[in-house]
Figure 1 (cartoon, rainbow, N blue to C red):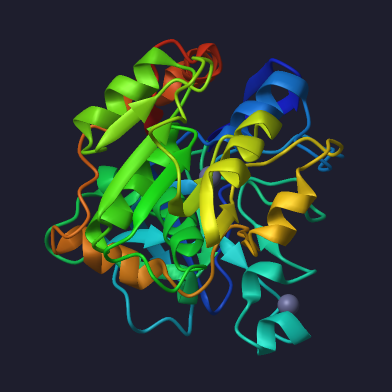
Figure 2: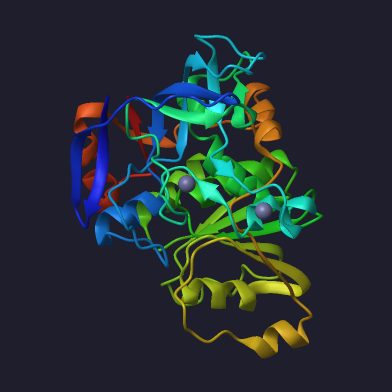
Length: 339
Ligand SMILES: [Zn+2]
Ligand SMILES: [Zn+2]
């Protein structure tokens, strides 16, 4: 089979590999759509992502959906040709975090298309991959394969929203109008938010947010933007910018909540006294747990609408161009590859 392997910064090569053989509890899948995530862009740009330094070439891609090609000996609940979405998380299942239901915090987590575990697990930028059958979800009526490849980032957004108990009736601020910010916008609206403001320095992201139903958009660069917009009940920091986090903490009401879902730099200062004297609640949100099926059903039922999130599509042969397009971020929301 053919697969694109990451060799280093800006170095993705079309390579030949053997088609993997599914184990007894596994399924061989042909990915049909895969989205490009911020982490894929990091790997492509720098050759590594955060603390994850690849030790051998591997295939990127963890936001995917595809078609069942072959079943492992013990897999009974799927058939060849089924369309499936795949939860890319493969936790150990036995550690304290897994046992308590927080499997996204598993220290031995294996994840498709990530160098966070060894050996690295090839992701969906290849013609085939094997996945545990327990990670696969047959698509219900009402959701296409192309939409299903957005479920992984949607789950990241849902997990962030679920950190906070009360969304209905509340005023929400989202700092960062990229794909995760946009998906949080759609989730909080589905959960009954009273109004939602999105802040982003990028014109395209602000215009996109208004089209997606934001009540207000602000450019945080403008002086005085926060004079009339503040006292938010809940703020989601989805940009990874220390300035945005400072805005978030500044503009959350007393007793309100701030959820950190963007990847921030390792070292910067935060206004700690504001957190203390406003009694803010601070939540970290990392990947997701226990929401995949719920997210899939909400999309299938039309409760969460994913229309328009994919702004650019490429074919398998143009994966390097797709990565360049995602990296350029020029009027781009989500880049998708049809395999
Ligand atoms: Zn992702
Ligand atoms: Zn574990």
